[in-house]
Image 1 (cartoon, one colour):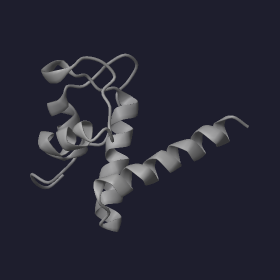
Image 2: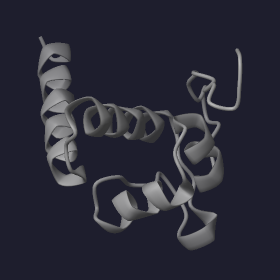
Image 3: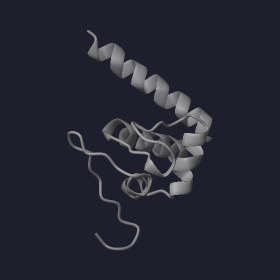
Length: 97
């Protein structure tokens, strides 16, 4: 690691959850970036409301995928969410085999 731009990559284990600020840090984004996607319905919390929202591993994974698609393909947040929805559906279908 060599600077302030380093991001630690990991996953939430078991029943542990993250606050909005912890999720933002884990994704390398601002809490405002997450709040915008929450307000648009593109990302959901697993429990709580307002300042008491909590996020688990699936939300961390989804937020990171949204960010990657937005950055890699210069996509707006709605298009990124559609792509993530399709990827999640493909994963569910393949897991059901």
